[in-house]
Length: 247
Image (cartoon, rainbow, N blue to C red; front, side, top):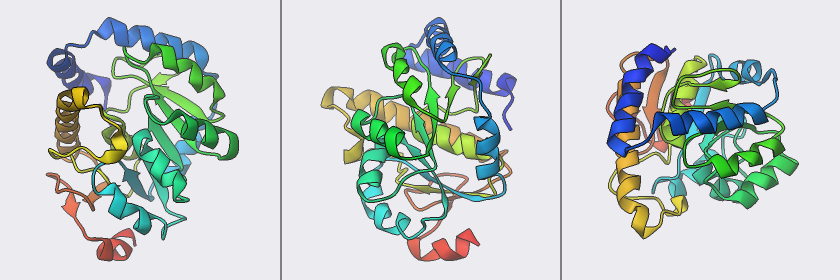
């Protein structure tokens, strides 16, 4: 479990590297805190994850190959970055937890809100203030920030939706964490809907996400695996090895 004092140095590096402003992140977090209602969702997340094998799903190039495999594991706990949500839902894979800064496909988010029981972990940062009202529609929702947590706003660590999902699973003591569609390479997955003008910054974010997962691997108590591109500290496994790994 990460203490904010340990995370603060990583956050300071993120602010400097990406020219972000902590006060802007805090402004956004305050808005989200005012929107969210008090709830017992944290307890539900803990019960869902603790001592379980958890799949964390991103929208990297390997996601296309992963979906058919994920469909075979209907009862496995799944945490998804919101950019992976549309192709997952279209193929009948509904995550238990959705980690989102509300940049994903809005129609899919609203569809799940109307018909499913997924838990939303909504992240507040400087650039999504105008989107935070959408959180009012989520029946099961908690809020997160990169900055210092307060009130109803938590900080489990992580930077992009994908690696925040891994930090979340680790925080709540998953027994094993297995990555799908999280490639962190020089290619951007087609499901991320990244504009050409945003490609450079997207690759920078992916690199930072990978760096943070490598850091997490040095102290987490969860066993770490990936079916995607190799990551330092994560054991690379094939789809054929999934059944063995899950047990």
